[in-house]
Length: 145
Image 1: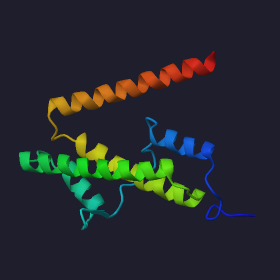
Image 2 (image 1 turned 30 degrees about the vertical axis):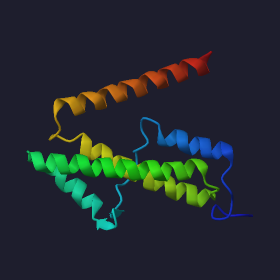
Image 3 (image 1 turned 135 degrees about the vertical axis):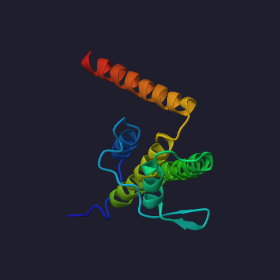
Image 4 (image 1 turned 90 degrees about the horizontal axis):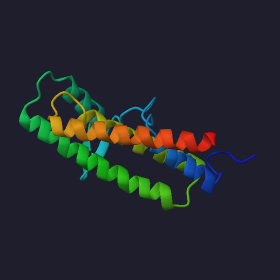
């Protein structure tokens, strides 16, 4: 019997992993990575995110820094997702890649949706969630019929 370490990811399994990554609740059970390397610098990401979202009133500089970090993390997640879409992967490698991407996206979400954000950013996030909900409802309606 072949293990997850050796088994190749099938196109159907790849589609499921990618769909899960774009689902509304992708972040359930996902931890922000302890550390992440961004621009050749090791960042204690989990601590940075926790410290930021724990602040009652972050300064404008802290908000800008958090948004800049969120942007860098999102860019890294996009690169990793492209690998997930295109590379020949084992099931184990695909699962690890998924977990890393989901952890990065969780950090992005936490950084962008904390109390220090301005109204425009929060409104965009809300509209994105509403669009996600609409897509799910349409999908469910198609399945019913």
